[in-house]
Length: 196
Ligand SMILES: C[S@@+](CC[C@H](N)C(=O)[O-])C[C@H]1O[C@@H](n2cnc3c(N)ncnc32)[C@H](O)[C@@H]1O
View 1 (cartoon, rainbow, N blue to C red):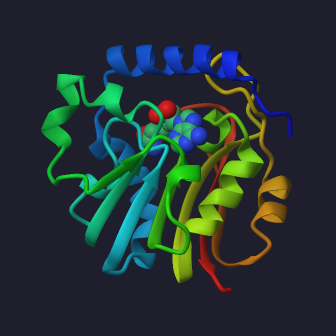
View 2: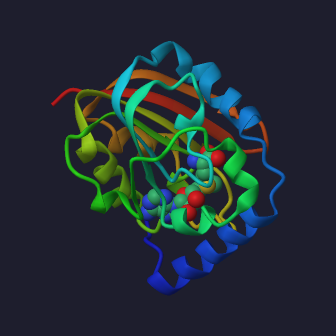
View 3: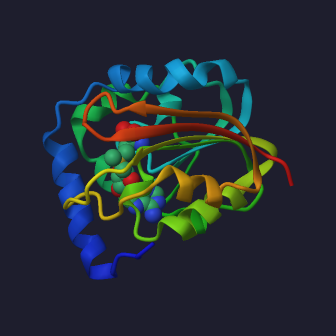
C-alpha cells in the first residue's frame, strides 16, 4: 500500500472540498444505503465517532443513539463554513479532530468509517488508528470502495483481501460484498467487534 505525499494529499483535499462545495448531496439517501445493512447491529452507544465524516456525520441520523459524538475529518472546519449542510446538523458535535491519530485510545464503543479509507494519506496507519480508539466490545461500521480505479480524489485501490487481513484482530459480524449504488466498482460493508 503506497502512502500519499503531504503535497499530493493537500491537492486531493482541495479537490474534495471543491466537490462538497458544489455537490447536490442528500444525506438521507446515502444513509439509507449504509443503514439498510448496519441498522440491525446498532445499539445505544456511549461514544460514537465518525471518521472521514464529510460535512454531515452519520450520527446526525436519529437512528444513531449516542451520549457523546465526535467528528474526525481534516476538512471539518471548512465544511462548517458551507451553509447548505447546516440544515442537517441536528445535534451538537462534542469533539472534533482532524485525524484519527489525535483521538484518544479505547474510548469509542461505536466507530463509523464510511467511504473514506481510499481517501486518506495512509490507509494502513488509519485503519490501525481506527482499531486503537475502539473500546473492548466496541463496534466498527466500515464501508469501503474496493477494486476501484485510482483517480484524482481516490489515491488508493483497495481490495477485500487486504482489508480482511488488516482487520484480522477483530471479530467479524458482517461482511457483505455488493455492487456500488453509484459506480461500477464493488463495495464492502463490514461490521466488526473489538475483542481485545
Ligand atoms: C467521500 S468523503 C466521505 C464522507 C462521508 N463519510 C460519506 O460517506 O458521505 C471522504 C472524507 O474523508 C476525509 N479524510 C481524508 N483523510 C482523512 C483522514 N486521515 N482522517 C479522516 N478523514 C479523512 C476527507 O476529508 C473526506 O471528507
